[in-house]
Image (cartoon, rainbow, N blue to C red; front, side, top):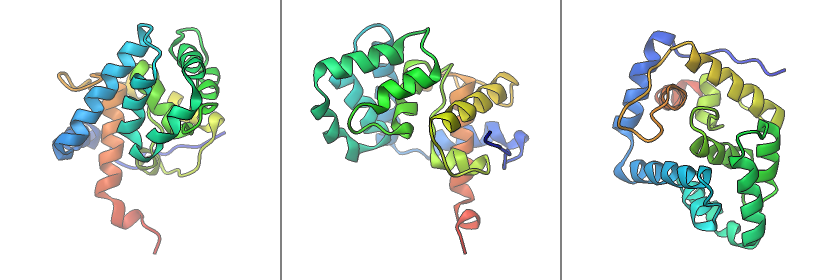
Length: 189
């Protein structure tokens, strides 16, 4: 079982979440907003390559060109599983990582934009803020459960007016911002 230890102080999380959005460039903001719009479209049944490309572009521009090799039917089937409200996290992640160009981190981003209240993005910065650096599917499900628990405890509030205005996504922003601001002290010496 993975062990997570929150590195930033809980009292700092809301400020860090707000700083994340303030520090993000216009392009990053646009990519994130577009990704969450694509996730909503997938959730409502639009299981298409353009929606998938929009999400992958947000997390890893360099992986977008791999997606075309999957074929429309494979993409549709994987996104249908990911968008199913009854799919377990393991089923959803496994369906997505079966696609070319989708690893666990990208799969978590796809799930997070489809269901922002249920899934967190598996990101190295958020992992650093939780005192951890390695991951696999089982790890992701434990990570996601930990972040959902923290968000449900009310350590941060939803950020109204931003893409995915959920406490879970505000927590992700806070953890990412904490890692970014502590990058030098976290780097191996």
